[in-house]
Image (cartoon, rainbow, N blue to C red):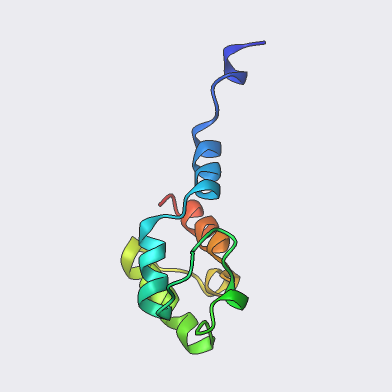
Length: 95
């Protein structure tokens, strides 16, 4: 067994890190955009957030873009249906 199997790949660490803890920025965005005071986990989805409708989805995308200095594609905007999806998009952007 070589050392490479003992040391995790940094990209894998980043992917797994969001599985445990949701970034404070994302929690703030949910509180601000949706006035959501429930727990925000990677499993939090549209179905659990009462005010997450089509109009607020645009506000969510705008807040993500502003907070992280990104410009999301239309496909990425449509892809976002949960906190996990947001984390995946941010990961692809290297944020």
